[in-house]
Image (tube, rainbow over all chains, first blue to last red; front, side, top):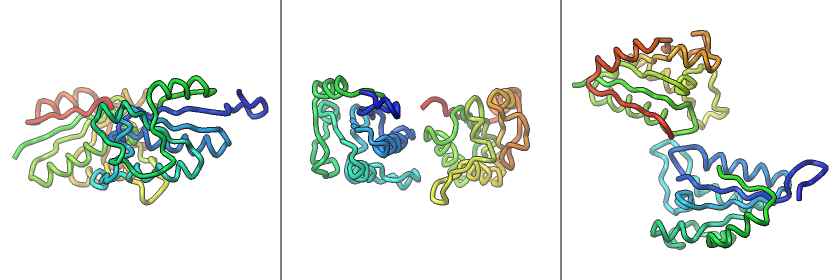
Length: 127
Length: 122
């Protein structure tokens, strides 16, 4: 339900679908998540399609003058953003869960479970 | 050694295109090639706004990086019509070393270079 007084949704799902580098979409998505959660919106960040590469360990983006986006996940979780990774997207790319950064708070879900998240959220958008 | 020119149609910071153009131009000069021009077209003109402010010393400033290319004798041309549509109507807004040049200028770059590279789309 929308918060009548502040006109804010209570819960939002943000879908990350792009590869981590080459565009600024994922980096800006991180900012959107922390901004929403700072406004007490229950924020759920979902990584699917090529965005699952964002969580890979051992990234070396220095050559392209970018920061390591995988290091942005833990602070997001500390800001109480719920982080989900879609299992099918990992399988399609041959990525094992142990190749991703380690954080007990990261939840691995199926696309079916994502449908439920979207159905229960007040708003969903892709970044 | 050869001559190279580059067309860039995307704006700063959203995609990596501008960064790639800058790196390729530097690398070409390092290898002894001549970059005879970078043509900024469509949203690419927004890269040439001298007031670009990256807010932090740690974050790259695309306007300053393009100005560095200009000091390496790489001309930076800006489509005046695209710029006008985007509110950049005065050359005073442009980076040092940048200048308006119409599509005739782009045609000359294509004709005069051994290789013409296009960076377009995300």
